[in-house]
Length: 83
Image (cartoon, rainbow, N blue to C red; front, side, top):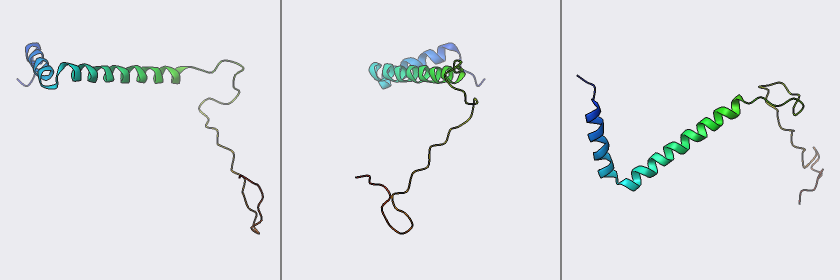
């Protein structure tokens, strides 16, 4: 008790297709497939190690961005011109 047999799942699937329509159901399954592909691609990119010579940084290290240069000095004089 409490578990569904294969026949129950087939009936449920047929009713779901009838209620949602074939086009909507197939588009939802296509979106699920795209999501799975993107997930697998992301996992594969994480596993790849950089080739020798392309980078000398330590793996797992986050590089910070350079601090922005100020546009004005303490006295209010313009230091750089961004116009």
